Image (spheres, helix red, strand yellow):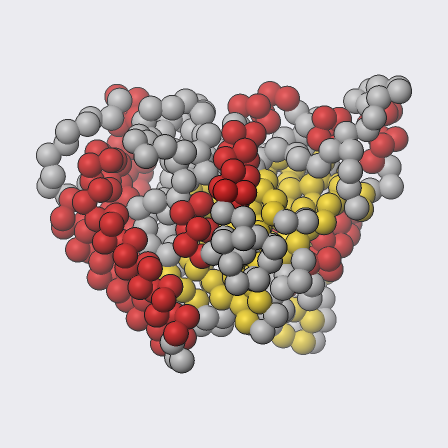
Length: 437
């Protein structure tokens, strides 16, 4: 489960386009924040995606991506042309192909590598969808999960939402802001669509004679869409975007992706994954619901800047600036599903899981200091002449503060013991990862 949003210049404080996503996956599914250079000229005839090979293209743009360590595709990212994309799992009435297709994450990475504008990226996804199909097994440990995809695509001038159901698709140009959260949202109005979008639904009996066609109503699977709690999360995202219309900025975007809907939130107290900042809690309804990476892009015609955690649980971590897709500091060795404190993702994961033992109390110990540090990053980064150097220093400070906060909270007495199901779930996750907390 994931949440993605975009805010256009009409509601941002500086006339930029601000894009953000929380990638929600399994708790030990570490994500790798990576830069891949572009190139011209075919080096290899084929490219190996997550499950299938497809023909290579002559020109590929450089990309910054956040990628679950075991797959080729990406959950979110940007390219050198200022195109950014985030995808969402959506659940439809069309059967999902589990073999011989591209995953939604493959489609996202391929679109970033091959597209110079948001609209080109939309058409790249549509063409790949037609040529190779979509689906595949989308889980790391959970090999049952498979889904179709929606995409939020933006560049420095515009944004589009693209939603799919098998080979069928609809796309809508964003006007002021938009949020997507694991459910189809496009209704009777759209700007582009598959030519058979209405007839296919009618043949299946999903659009009754005499009724106005509504894409989401016709193609959505009721059960999985309902229990993904996507409507609750999307409603909250729209509220957060609308509440600061005209003043939406990086601080607002960070607070948005950290949002739990209430100030007294505890991650062990609810059944469904109905919060923007998502926390795993059990193997039944909240397993693939851990926000494992968070990404914000600030897009202007003359520059693109990024704010990333590179870690899970944005409510417990630090957003750091990147001056461009090229300026990614050293994050340590490539992560996998096992604890390695030399890697940025796993170093923070120890702090995160210590916080989970008494969430409100332990987070309160350092959250104000963390927020102040981020505010200093925002102010200093905007004023800095050497933004690449500033970014490197911010990542180094992140490492330092994470270790300090681990020491501050690791031996604190627990005042609010989480429920037994929640404790056992995380005990199992920690054992699998080889992480002692």
